[in-house]
Length: 117
Image 1 (cartoon, helix red, strand yellow):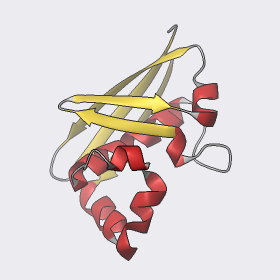
Image 2: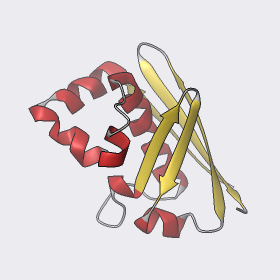
Image 3: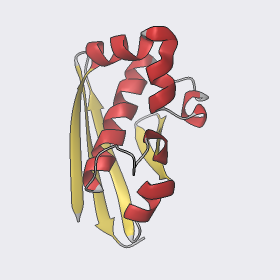
Image 4: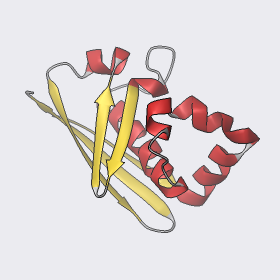
């Protein structure tokens, strides 16, 4: 079993992704993720979830793991991860469970990788 957690300060994150015509938003999220028209607060949870999954995989985001290798989707209270590329390779043999909570100030996520499909 592997775990990863992350906490995001919502206001700070929202300011960052809305600066510079949203360039950071495009760097962090795929077109598929953005096509779901997430609100700013959802983007904070999605970012935190990506960080949690990367930590559970035992790596950070660098030249080997792209932000786009981990896609996060929110449907009501359900947060799911879809992996591709290097993230998919690192997660081979594991099942990913995600948990998220949020208030006005912070988004907190936890990723749990359990053995088995």
